[in-house]
Amino acid sequence: MIDNLKKILNEDQDPKAIEKITSKLENLLMSNEEIGYIAVQKKPAITVFPDSIVVTNKRIILCKPKNLGLSMEFMDYDWDDIAGTFVKEGFLGADFSFSTKTDLTHTVEYLPKNQARKLYTYAKEQLDILKNGVETNLNLVSNTSVEIEEVLTEEVTDFAEILPVVQDTEIEEPISSQEKKLSEFTKEELFDKLNNYKKLLDNGLILQGEYDKLKNEILPFL
Image (cartoon, rainbow, N blue to C red; front, side, top):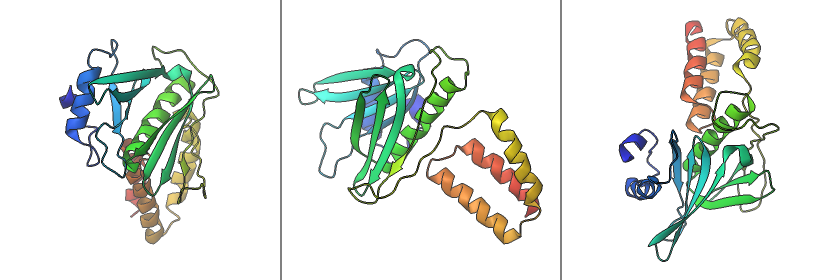
């Protein structure tokens, strides 16, 4: 299974830890269920038995080692039970939280920031699939909210909310309006726009396909 996860591994992850988690999940995954991303806790001190969180195309799975790592406790929540997901960043990492429609909130602390952002991005995609009515084995949900919260210190000092992505049919008109105005920008301004899109991609706030589309729209005018 680890071979199938190489595409989601990055420099923040320990391949051995990922392999250990996936080996325990192998017999728990349902038919047609695929792992989208795995994030592993990394506390400031040495974490011998870290908690981890797994997101699949069907659910969120919390993995907590028990009995000195000899056993593992799993808690899972289907996407149609999720009301929202949240990320709070601090100096020592990030907290990833999700709330359910029964007003339960679960948090995994001390995740590497990049991993927490990728969790948020994947969760946003899954919730958007449900909201926008894309074919799925899960029930449709409404009023789904996804937001990300950023902090510079241990206390919340600044907030940034990212609304769920709307359907392609809803964003085509503003994009086309922007294309008509690209010719009016100077090359310096176009380079600035391109750099801003790259920053969004690096921070995990837009997908590679979205970045490529925006870049290809700008390049003819440079």
